[in-house]
Image (cartoon, rainbow, N blue to C red; front, side, top):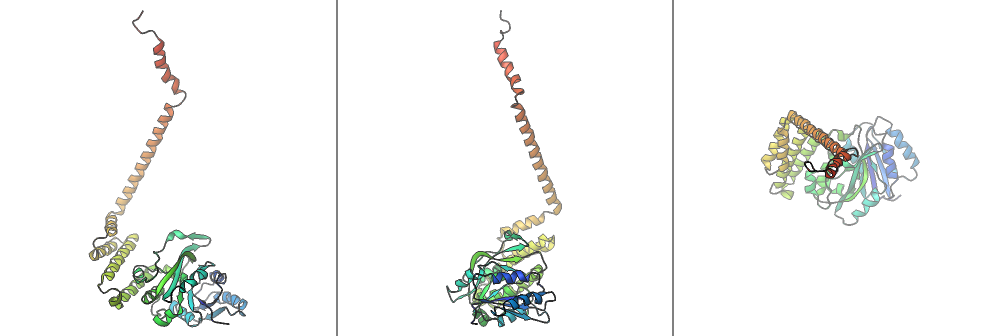
Length: 355
């Protein structure tokens, strides 16, 4: 069997209940020149039984390869193991709890042919839980070309939507095995220095929510991502930020986001410190001043304002009902004769004082 165009790497841990849907979504691809490499990172559930059924069914075609680890080694090492055991010109990643739409590879692979400088192609996605989808949850703005600046402020690449040229790994390295979370963010930042990115503006991936997954460790992930970005900016200052303005802009946004997060958790003093740090770096930020104004309103004041607004709405509604009832009464059939009889009767009578 020849070298496949795409190697699909699925590194999974205890996702046996979701894995069939993920694998089926790969096998349903309209683009068929691919192999699947499943790395079982020491799962203790039925993952091995699930994969074995697929492996036996696809044995002759040699399409699905299964690597089972006796103990859990962590996501970065498991993904790197999958890459090393893959053969394709391009590596596409899929988490074991996510799902591809059938045309995902068909629409992404041709974009690499536009230029040898394109190293990563990704797409839009939607969140889902069971049969329900949540497209309104949103995603940072997509970008193509040189996207280092975009990545500084947001991880714009949904991991399970990514397909990567093999040369990217050969030139700029694989996943950093020293960090437990945000490993894709670190990878995209490094790749962005030497490669262009492109994307398909369609929802080609469904990311599962509503269960215990790595993304639930959001606060820890955010802290690690900040450290990754800060170290990246320091290492590459001469190349991407000689004046230091990009780092200052990033710091201002970082403190604003930290403030917003703490405000949401009712940590008022922490939020205020973060907002003031943001303003000390960049004073002309209307959104930060607005956040401080909202923070200055105590919960009691906010609740009082809400109650007052509710009372005003109720009063307006009551007034409208009374006004409507009065108008209706003035136009009712029983009211019309009394109004008309007076002036008509007086016009027909003989004026008083006349013979």
